[in-house]
Length: 417
Ligand code: SAH
Ligand code: SF4
Ligand code: F3S
Image (cartoon, rainbow, N blue to C red; front, top):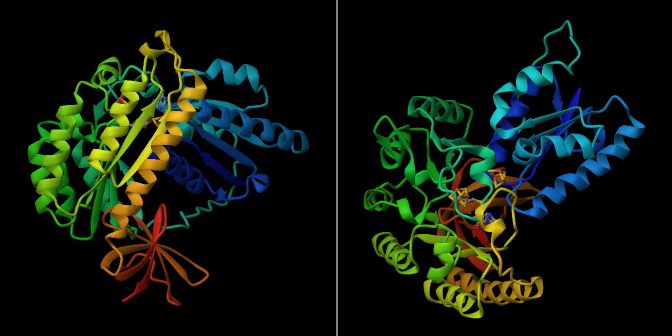
């Protein structure tokens, strides 16, 4: 049996897909990256924006054709959309074999086993692509209820995972060859298990010898502590990159979004981080066109982007989501206005990020090599910028020095030193 998993959405889903793959491999199935070759196809869905759900349904449409040709094909839908839209998926796509929500993933092994042949020989395949970096979920769910966001409804309340389990998982990952650990949660800054907070957890993870680099995401400005800033500043294993979503530069919109901070508070935190950790890169998320966003509100966001000079900005068009508080708001911003504002901010922020990255030209930076194809290595520096360089050696998993020669919009080119 060959299986194919399509992952839509955030790193949480990537991590969940890894777990499903592991179970399938343990049960003697082989992984393929060609959907057409697979006997089992799993679509791991996301519902954060309408476009993510649309993507799942169009993939399911293609799978119907595949199942018409091969009626034995097994199709599973998992993840966040599967969690709340189970009925809709089942009625729109009757050919789907099972639907399993993100919160029920513990049941995956029980569910999938029903579809697998009972083979006499007990072949077990191992995960082929040993990852250089490994995602580790430290918290489930979210209890912040930002008014636009569906995540708390589909993933449930915030729960911190026992740090002993996390440390065990980190140990397994580095034994398997991982060099970088990426700790995941919708708001890692509020991690707390038995009095162990996020800073304490970072200290525990960095004490593991084989862990070379640590990253984490995502942060919430309302919970980012001074203690954490101090830890990042002094702990050499923690990468110099913080993703700190702002969402909007307007206080009226931030309030309506239920973000629980003002723009001024965000700016204070931002400056404190920059002053304490000079080589840090801070990236952010922005939502354009939240209900009621005026030209003035948008200008506040645009000005914030110019003033703060993010290392990178992810700009999303507001998407009204079922169950959320903001879905009931009036004063919808017309799509043409959203598109215009989106383009304005995107173009301006790209110029800013490129200018920021240009300071690396002729500098020698330390990178961890993640991939190697056709004599080109793909690596990442501490600031999370992708760097490509020529080499005839496979350096995957190694930390090497590269001199930066050129800056592109989302990556850089360099020469191995
Ligand atoms: N927990 C994280 C990220 C959650 S989703 C956080 O709070 O930062 C990732 C990003 O998607 C969010 O930061 C937000 O910018 C965006 N997003 C969430 N819901 C959205 C919606 N309804 N429409 C458009 N963008 C949305
Ligand atoms: Fe959504 Fe807000 Fe939770 Fe992030 S913190 S997942 S944006 S509710
Ligand atoms: Fe992630 Fe999308 Fe779910 S962003 S938590 S996969 S709704």
